[in-house]
Image (cartoon, rainbow, N blue to C red; front, side):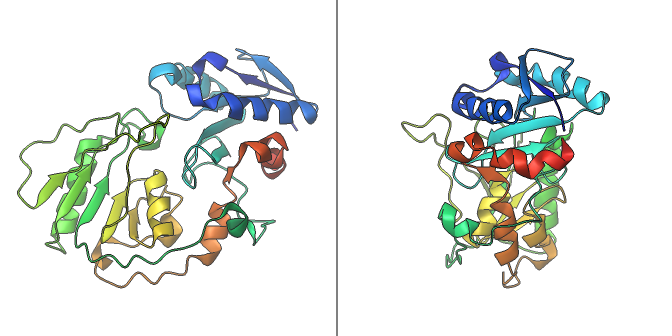
Length: 280
C-alpha cells in the first residue's frame, strides 16, 4: 500500500474542490500522507486526463509518474449523475483504467443511486455521432475529425438514416462539405450549472469513441456504438447491426458501472480507496 500521494491543487477544475478534499481526507484517515506539488510521492492524484486549461500541466505529471511505474489516481466528472457522482480510477478513466468494479459488488447499488435501465421508445430515425475533446488522453492523439468521418462512411455502408454530428461543447470540429442528410447539433449550456450541456438520447443509436456519452446511451436504452476502450463496450452494438433490436442484457453491466463512480460522501468515507487499494 502506498504511503504518500501527491496532488496539484492549481491543476484541477474549479468544481473539483469538494471531491479532492474528500479524497485527501480519506487518504489521511488511512494513514497516507498527502503532499502538494510533489514529483516524488508513491502515487499522484490528477484531475481528469484532459490536457487543456488548468489541467494542461497534468500531462507532464501523468507521464512522469507512469514512467516510474507509480499509480496515477484519476478523478473526474461522472457519467451517471453529472456533478453528483465522480469517477475515480487508476491510470485512466476509460476501459484502460482500473476501477475494481467487477468483483465484490453490491447488487443493490443501482437502486441506491437511483439509476435504472430504460427502454428507448423513440421513433426518431437519426443516428448521433457524439465527438470528444481533442486534447483528452482518451483520444490518444487521434485525429478526431477523421474518426467522425470514418463513422459517417461506415454508417452509410449499411444505412441511409439521417446522421447528426455533435461536437464536444469546448472542442469544435473542423468538418466541411457535409451532405444534406447530415446535420450538426450545437450543444447548449444549461443555465445555473458549472459545465453541463443539454443532452438527450432521442436517437436510434449513439456513436461515441469512449466518453461518458456511451454509458448514458446504454442506460437510456439507445443503441451505443462505441470503441473497445469505452466502459460501455460490453453492451454496445456494431454498426452493421444498427437496425437490429437492442435487446442486450445490461443488468450485470449496470451494477458494475455503478461501482465506477461515487458521491462526495462516499469518497469521504474512503469507499473508493477500499475498492482500488489492491492496485495501490
